[in-house]
Structure formats: structure tokens, C-alpha cells
Amino acid sequence: MSSRIGLNNLSGFQEIFIVALLLISFLAIFYSDIEAGYKIGIALLVTGIVFLASFATQILKQSIPQKNP
Image: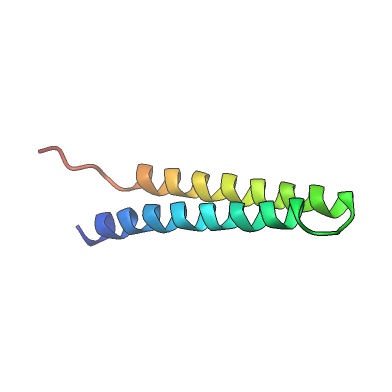
């Protein structure tokens, strides 16, 4: 029961984390005066983090056994 509550909290935290990460990356990419190579690197890094966070959450959801009511 406690792991289920923790996973729901993790999903909410993940959504907030991803939205904050995307907002910061958009600010860094569009409103900063840095080279295009760094902007591409930031975009790839953010995309990788979002993908890995989503992948990790799916693995956690699959590893928790579901109770049949």
C-alpha cells in the first residue's frame, strides 16, 4: 500500500519536474545568447532526461504487482 502511494506521488513530482525542465530549457534555448551547438546540446539533454524519467516510471509501474479487487 505504501509503495502505491509513493508511486502516485512520484508521478505528480515527475510531471512538475518535466514542466519545470521544459520551461527552463525553452528560456535557455530561445532567450539566451549562446552558440547553436550549445542550444542543440541543451535540447538533446532535456529530451534524454524526459525520456529516461518516463521510462523509469513505466518500469516502476510494471514492477508493482496489481491487486485484483
